[in-house]
Amino acid sequence: MSSASTTHSQIHRPSPTSVGTIVWLGSEVMFFAALFAMYFSLRANSPEIWAHDTAILNFPFALINTLILVASSFTAQFGVFAAERLQPRATGKSPLKWGMVEWFILSYVLGAIFVSGQVWEYAMLISEGVSLSSNSYGSAFYMTTGFHALHVTGGLVAFLLVIGKTFAAKRFGHKEATSAIVVSYYWHFVDVVWIQEDVEYGQKLFLSNCASCHGKNAEGTANGPSLIGVGAASVDFQVSTGRMPGAASGPQLQVKPVQFTEEEIHAMAAYVASLGAGPSIPDEAYLQANGNPTKGGELFRINCAMCHNAAGAGGALTEGKYAPSLDKSSPKVIFEAMVTGPQNMPVFNDANISPEEKNDIITYLVYLRNSASVGGEELGGLGPVVEGLVSWFGLLGIIIAITIWLGAKSN
Image 1 (cartoon, rainbow, N blue to C red):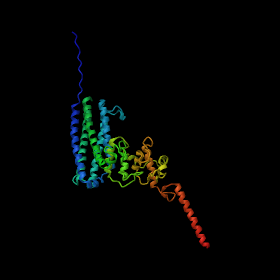
Image 2: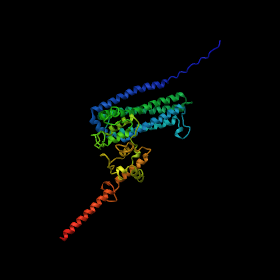
Image 3: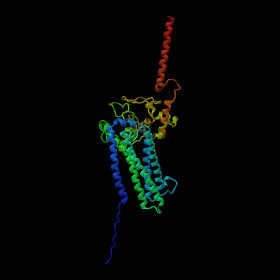
Image 4: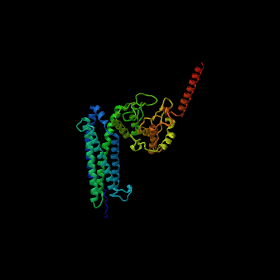
């Protein structure tokens, strides 16, 4: 009688540590959902307090701090990839050869910068009179951001524990890799919570102010286009210049007084950006007007002067439309217009004009704005045709006046 060999299929069960961490993070989601509900409820009951105190916030600083935290999530994930390869430490100087330890150290540094930035922001707000006990805004702001900061600090401690455990282990194996993966779950969670607060707030603002034309899901209607994929830069451009919400239909949206605070604009931009990939709000590094004005002038004359005039003074287009003057446009508005292409303007993506070249164009326009005219009165910068007509009619008027004077003299 022959014996048959029996094969047993190997069962792969998820790590109990991973499952436990995911369940615990689920409870944390409920905790932060309650904090968000408190924040939005208090804001709905005290809009005047929110409008006053949010004006004190330094939003460029907050945006940079947010980008630092988001970047740390990417570096943490690179550390996870290294851990999955069972590569604890670098095999070369290039970041491409870094191990889990190097990526986690970088994530720790970025997270520590974020927490330090929050502490500095708290100090600035307290100096402006916004404290935990000042009003409902102070209570809601410090509770939501404070609890998040505590969670980020816990993540920093977890990074140190995993790095220390890696150095203590004689051999980096599956158990050590699992620890790294679990810490990354937690770190991604604190990143998402920080971003999601803006997204949820932006969605509420969108439903209240924009959904009647653009649809409840920004899918577009007969009265307004879809906003899926337009990006945060498009929302920031249209709303921060007062063009949106539109007051009336016409050939072109007009610039009006801005109807939202900077916090509200940032939140709506974050919500629309979450619906689909699109141009993001430009980095401050490209808005400093510290590029090459000569190169920027050449690029502007080639790509923009046919509509905006060589001096950025604007000009008429067809069907009642016009290219606006750029004399009072901020560097951010100019950059966002180039990457989003509002109205009749074409889109100049990074393949057409690089971010550095966009900075050169901004530098040229700022130079024109701040430089005195060497040719006398600029006449609105409308160009040589207008200047020639003014000179011609001015000279003709002088000749006529002299003729009349001489005729009166002879009589």
